[in-house]
Image (tube, rainbow, N blue to C red; front, side, top):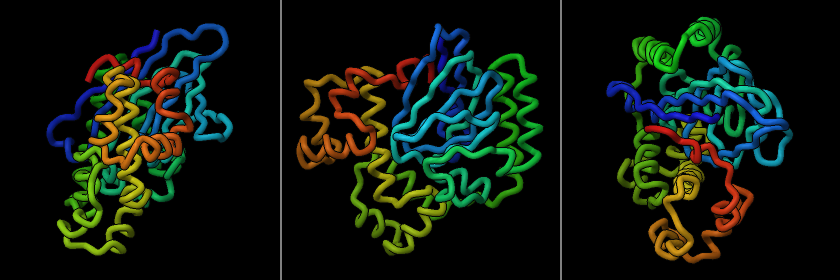
Length: 274
């Protein structure tokens, strides 16, 4: 049985948190279960209270995750290999929120998963223990909310122009004119790219491509997009033509859109609530 549940944040955390999630696999058949996730434009802090799964990014080899880890911006598909029951909760952040809340340079975490205790110290050891001791999802999420509340009290979290730029890119699903964006924010290309790289981990132009592909993959995995709708969707998502769309999609996912639509093993298929 697989349960993957998304939970909305309380109102005061909405500027920083996209959602909380809980993921449980109570039984695994003989062999292993393989799942994939496309780049989606968000970063996360993840806490295991069950057996950690193995992860591979792009064409790299599988390696086990830490008990608690941070994930930076993903620029390509990543894959999960699961051979034992999984129990996991996490915080999915708005694109620049980890840098805002924790002061971390996010270019160091792009396409990476790092031991969260090594990054943030003993407070993670305490939080990890609380999560492992909790009896249910509600308790685990409450500990994550409390952890973020304390962080908010100790940081100056006023948004800057990189935050505004990233939020606008998300709002427009990656379909946005960069020159217009820079004019609206009264910032030069060089300034925006430098700030964005630190806070999001990639350039604003590349992030817009990631967000656009993430949105499209979610439509496919959740069965909200049929092949007959391609022509209209390609136009609405700002692609010049079908070949441009296929080339961009394949560069991130390693598959053509038709292959992905038919054979994806994305976690979104198991989404139970939001």
